Image: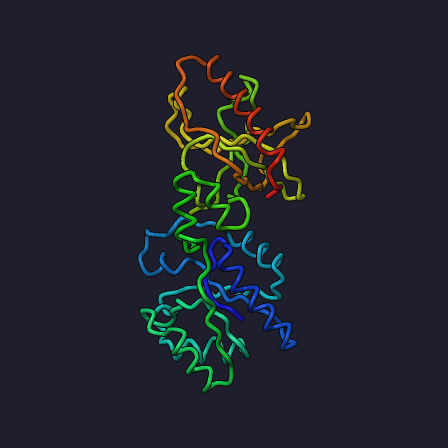
Length: 297
């Protein structure tokens, strides 16, 4: 088994999880990922919940795709945050999950105020009969991959660097809701996404990406994030125009995902609607060109 929040399931996480799967296969036992909900920071410091890179559903899908047998979600409560490192090992890892081997990142901490580390977990494993492996942190030449790093890339609109750390395009999920219908009036009808709470929404701008439906189809889309300054909007919105949409495509009320392949430009205010429409045409053409050579991430 391995333990962590694993928000984003980025390439560093994937390495640790992959090692867990390898060891489980060699031992002939199931591989298990123990994760937490809500994010521990929200419990420890209410109101400071970090933007989430992956919701529970997407995290489960990503872990399944990696080959994990079981995802166990442990509710993170005030009681759990006050549990000592020794009690966490005894009650959760030994009594409930019967761990035979634990693989964690070399900076792993656990127990009240993070009192436990890899060395303490190794010592506990000797007492209770499980082995412990500390996996080295992963990254590029000058960057260590972490959820915090990926969030900073997304927040800056640098979806290319986020994808390099994630091993895929960043994605947000939500429900399509009704907007002002302005897009339909100017020839570019959009799907307005209401993201899941705490979603890591990229910086304002226009992006090339894809709209992912529950049936698995991935439709190329030009995605706008911002307040629609040309129309003096105040509410920040996420809108996707699907390229070459089939007539009658109705997405209202549907749970969809939006992936972000590249940032095209910043959000601009146009003096006339005609100028906005011309720019949208250029954005759509550029989106098609970019996605033609981009992996279906």
